[in-house]
Image 1 (cartoon, rainbow, N blue to C red):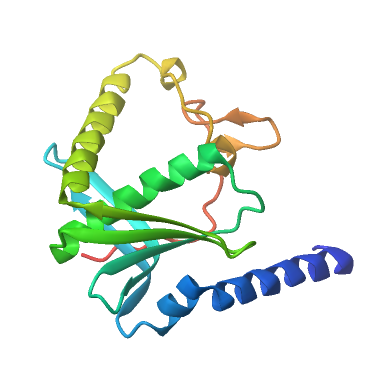
Image 2 (cartoon, rainbow, N blue to C red; image 1 turned 90 degrees about the vertical axis):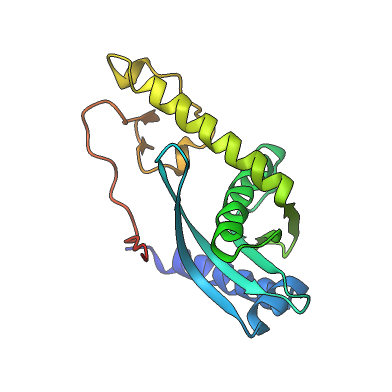
Length: 193
């Protein structure tokens, strides 16, 4: 249990973040859209047979008829490295939305709840082809690495580790491949057919 002072601090932060979302033009548009989905679980199979999935915080149809992906981020500071990772995440989501709705253009946005700032992207058919190729390449690289004798020999991208369920924060180490179970997942993920 958190001490009362900490609970009040976190509650204040949550309230402030909610107010930032509601007050932002993008938040208003997303919350007032007539067609929308929240926590939309999507999956698609690549040509190689690999199943890819993602959960979109909010997907809404804007007044121009474009599907918009809205991803909430609670970061207290924005940084370039994370922005690049978020861009890839949103390109991936846009790729899935383009397949689901047969769309040539999909808009995607990060809404930083702490500041109300946004980061926006527009993806087109050309982008979808490129992301599809990149995803196939990444899956191929992962499959090649799986052929090693031990997962410990695989070169890892550690920039996202503290957010991963396979990262042991106390020991500051990735536990994937060490014979340990991953840390418990906080939410249950359900995928629709």
